[in-house]
Image 1 (cartoon, rainbow, N blue to C red):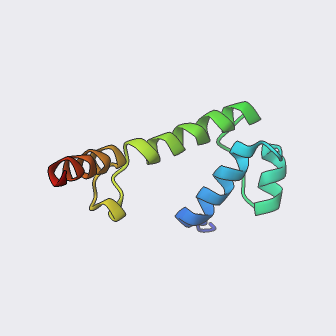
Image 2: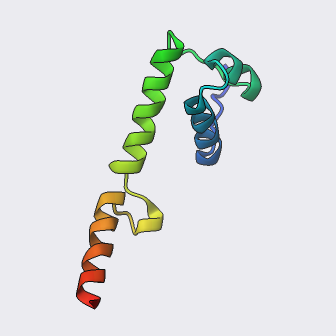
Length: 86
């Protein structure tokens, strides 16, 4: 049994951004980056799934660069600090 390959966050982001640009089909992206597309039936389904993942990461997922806050929480804290400084 072969071990499942793990991809870095940078690699995933690179592929996701290229998919959003819609310059290549999902099959072409899979071939270019040597990845398998077993999870999605169609290109549009893949775009929706990737879009949902990006939205989750940008809106709801805690980020270490924000002290494990979500981007929204980090923004709220930042704006409160600006108002307090004014």
